[in-house]
Length: 479
Image (cartoon, rainbow, N blue to C red):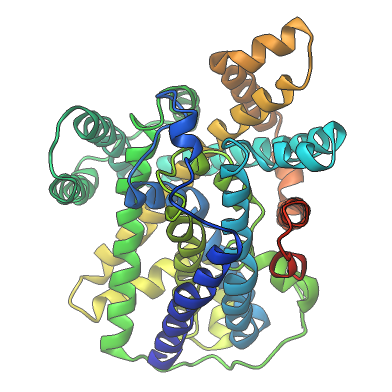
């Protein structure tokens, strides 16, 4: 297993070092160009920020549970095809998709892919894309509100830790903005306190019902979507990213120390009874571990408005996706330590998150971390990132409402275009309606396909932009 980890890590690093640099040259990335974070700076959405902070926000927003759940389930088709698609897809599809979506937005005043479509295809194309993106985001909001609320009910310690994280993020954001404390020192202090809060959360769990948590989440996501990005959303995501970095680091070091045997056969299963055929289900299932259309919404939504210099786009867009692919590799490793029969049985009874938590918890035990604590830590990390994706989605949906309204001259459209509070209220109410009616449960199974279609549309829009700017689009057209 060590060889899988090392080879994957080397391939991803080489891709960043060489292919990412080549792509940057093709896109004409130049720090002499002024980014929208500066030219459109408003202190709310457009805020120039340090590259590590933007990377933390971007990575925390795109990661969620996707690069964990998808690869764990996809191993049912065989770990070899799953691993190959994670590496090939991540390097040549997903990271390219994320970087080019980010750069297209930066070159269009930090607006979404929908506005890029309008510039080269027309208003109708823009509106169709925005409607599709809005429907996708509403579905994610409804589903993740349900997931987070249920997680907080079943794991009260995760709830208390998450509430403490929010409070810490507010203080961190205020101090970072107000005082000239060295960034590295502030980061060490913030991350240390955050890990201390995990212990506090375990000691003092918050026991509330499902309805109460839904109400609290509604208030929280509304606030997160309208407050200046560097006050709550950005610092929370930045600090939370260290949970995922820590989980990955502990898991990777544990694998290197233990060198566990691979018990599962890598043979390809072209059909799995509960999933269907390898093509296209494998690719739809892995999704975020290789390529995800949702990433284009984040890249062209919140991330592009925070990029300080164009050279940061490679670190955030291309590098962020490769880190996520590495997380997907760790997810694959977490389940191939068991036989196929044991894996299938556990997947059906315990679910992918539990399998991943137990697998990585076992790796952490190899370096002296108690397995019970390791499993709880991994489960807490996954739930924290579900909440991170939820608040980012709400802000992105508000952007979609405003951009759609900008193309219409009616008084009500002008009202929504210029009022972030009204747009956010509309998003939250529609998300709540989808949740309370239960319709999200019927729609969620098609999300995987919709997500890949969104990626294809984003790549198509970027390809048109590249053609119009006299750049050979082969690196986006082929994917």
